[in-house]
Image 1 (spheres, rainbow, N blue to C red):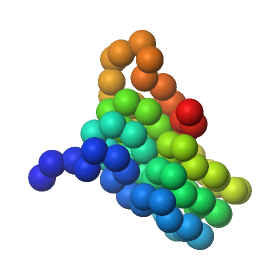
Image 2: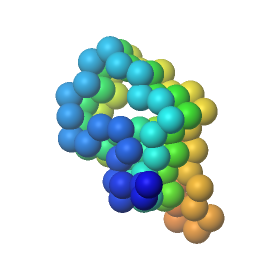
Image 3: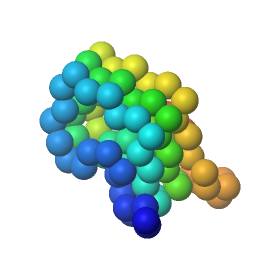
Length: 84
């Protein structure tokens, strides 16, 4: 099954009290992208370029554990969180 280009978990959502675990994206935001997460846990998510756990969003009282980026380009960043 192919990976989504962006966000394997949540895209542009308001999420409260959830666990986003084991999601992946080809480029950005393996766990979540462009939303608002409150009291959530982002664990073991993977992105190809930026923000293995979260990319370009607001995190409120969240826990970010063991997320990563697979890309090897110097410009790739944010195994846990990235915001550009």
